[in-house]
Image (cartoon, rainbow, N blue to C red):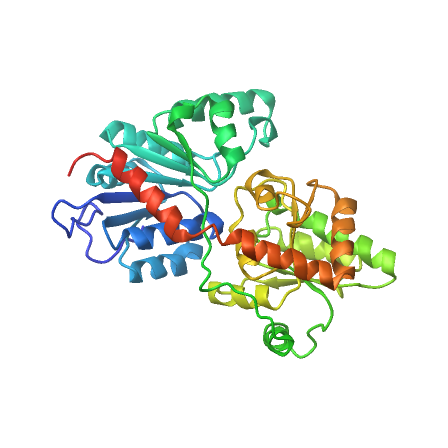
Length: 403
């Protein structure tokens, strides 16, 4: 286990402000995705007005993220929670806090259960943010396992003073799927950084971006971009099949597809690309630093997200701020970003033909792409990180124990 320099022997740094709000954020993820970027936005802002510490795993994939937050004044305790000693250190961190925020990228797992148990034992108020809204019936386990998991997690999260959903559908699902008190459920949408993500209208600048990111052979035609972790959740195999369908319809690739990100399915996706003979159509660009993602979006013409389930996708919101038209699946908060055909295209998850139809329409019509991109840009302006942070901070102050 590694800890931030300057920590006390028990892994907890004392408060630096007299009477300050002490917020402990707990992140259970083993990877860097939208949930962790959300926490970065909230925790770095909170560190300006409160004492902030984060408990997260020691996995090296999180090191760069930890370094960014540390530079912003956030302190860390990194715990695998693999034994009794780790749990005792977690309890001490929880005991330090006046309020605890549990950041949930997935509701299935022991880390969050152990974290909630520590809050119960130390009698510390807990708020949970749920980044995924899923029915219990779609969990990858048998009926008995799903039922047990729903009851167990309902009992665990029932302790939380506030349960934060990112979308309206998530706000409806939380009470229904695990019996959570609807009076404790509040919807607070994600935000987007309009200072980082913006359209690049000049065609020459966009071509230069493509050449820098994709090399001298970067395509001049329509470029469809996906930014996602390469996991089963994102349905990227469906996107590859849709690209193959389009290639078959047109006797060649009507557009290029680039998937920016990394994950455990990279080898399997590349094998599927090779099997369908679309290596000249679909490119796995691999992982890129966060500072490069705005360039990828600005260089593209269409953003596509083929997920089987989502919360409120940060990647989709960033694409909207970049002026891109969206093609997304009918899943939770992401579909809420596209409320009508005037705002983008929504297709059923797991439907490569439907996805190909929606993409075909946008690929063929530059005027439609521009119109939907303008609408996306206008729609996303109501989602700001400042608004998300202010509402979340007010909620944490409301339930915190007195200083």
